[in-house]
Every structure is written in structure tokens, then in C-alpha cells.
Length: 202
Image 1 (cartoon, rainbow, N blue to C red):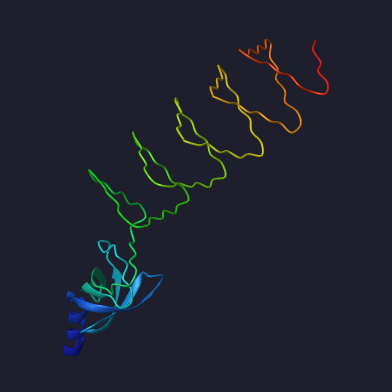
Image 2 (image 1 turned 30 degrees about the horizontal axis):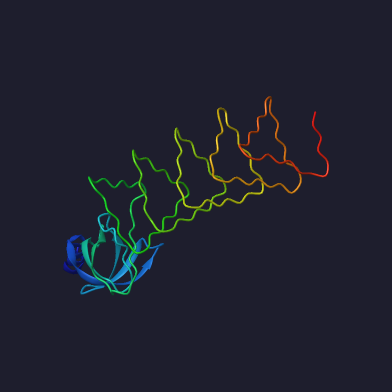
């Protein structure tokens, strides 16, 4: 082997580390072209580097040309550039206490599961849009100054007592109102009034 070939082999297997500037990405963002003092080199994102490199980033490289170079860290980036974190396929975050603070948070997933002993949410306004909602609870309580509901069709089944207490109750049906029971009791302390074109009793 010539002296030149030997020098090339040593350069390929020698460990390299230093800074560079990302020029472009390829292979779906898995390989990056980096401008370094040794020329333009290709490097992959290291597993410990969670911030996805972008063109223009100043990065820290390490590795060798034979086995491959890796982007270990993003040293500097334009403040106006967006940041993206890339995590392995299965990722678990574990902490004694975790706090997330942001002006806006968006979560997108095909399936989401929340398991907690106690959930408390406080806000000014909330909106939900679902195809189907199912709620199961031992006790369900709701408190509101006003309750407004709209439905094309409504059905409710109560196994025990269904009790309503109100200062005034107004039921109105455009066509038919039916009350059916084994025993029907209507009491009024002052006035009981039944009005209609025809009244049938018995």
C-alpha cells in the first residue's frame, strides 16, 4: 500500500469532531450535508440529538468517515426558525413533576388515553366536537347559571325516581303531549285549570 493510500485510510478511520453548518437534508431528513473545515460531509442525527437539524444550523459533529458522522447537538440557530423534536418510535417521559407552559398547545394522534386518579381543568371557554360521546360515572354532578341544549331526538331512561324541582316549569309540544302511568296525581294548592276544545275524562 502506498504512502498516500495509507494516509487516506488513516483519515477515514480517524475520529473527527468539530463544528459545521447544515446545508441540506436528504433521505427524508435522515441524512444531512454539513459544511465543515474538512469539506462537505454527510452526517446522521444522533440518538441523543432530539432537535431536528435544519439548513443554516451550526452543529457539532463527531464520528469518523468510515463508520459515519453524527450530528450531536445544535449549537446555534436563527431565532425566527421553528424547532422540531424527533423522538424514537417508543418514548416515555418520566418525572416527579412535569409542567408544560405555552401560549398554544396542539396535540394530534390517532388514539389518546388519559389515566389519572384526579383531573382538574380550569379555563374560560371549552369546545368539543365528537361523533360520539359516552360518559360512565358513579355520580354525575353539574352546576351552571344557564343550561341550553338542542337535539333532534332525545330519550332518557331512569330506573329509580326522576325528580325535578323548579320555581316554574313550562312544557310545550307542537303536536302531542302524553302522560301515562299506573297512577297519576295532580295537586294544586290554589288553581287547577284544564282548557281545550274537547275534554274527555274516563
